[in-house]
Image 1: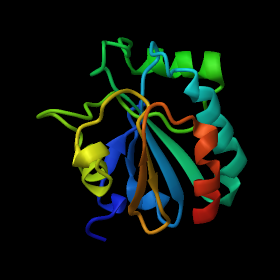
Image 2: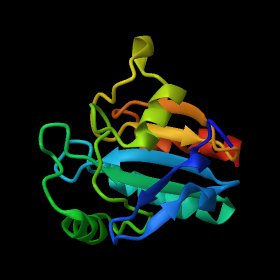
Image 3: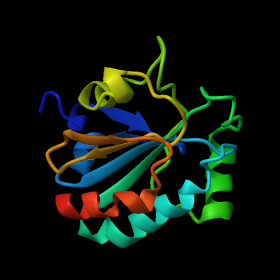
Length: 160
């Protein structure tokens, strides 16, 4: 179990704590999100991936973050409302977290170690960086903010 995502828990934006053991044997796409970013329209693509593959054992997990240009200024209920109204998002959204710095959420320390960025960088560069997790809870791949969700579909299918 060590060195898998299953050692973590996180709090949904409604206050419910989720243990990642609940996602055992599922393929996951973990994304740091923001509502006021040039990449915000990716919510639509993420929701499409979730709808297409959720019945096959796949989930998208959204972690709002306000560390990049103050592009996620709202509180947790504002974020949920924005995502629901504008993109019909119904995949899990968690409480706003930090993905870099001294207050980095432990799950993001794990993700960054499992799939460093270009030239081995551990930091998240911007909103909508994506991490693909296999059914064994291990990080398989990191995708840049510029990678559109639909470009990840084949990788998801291969792991399902």
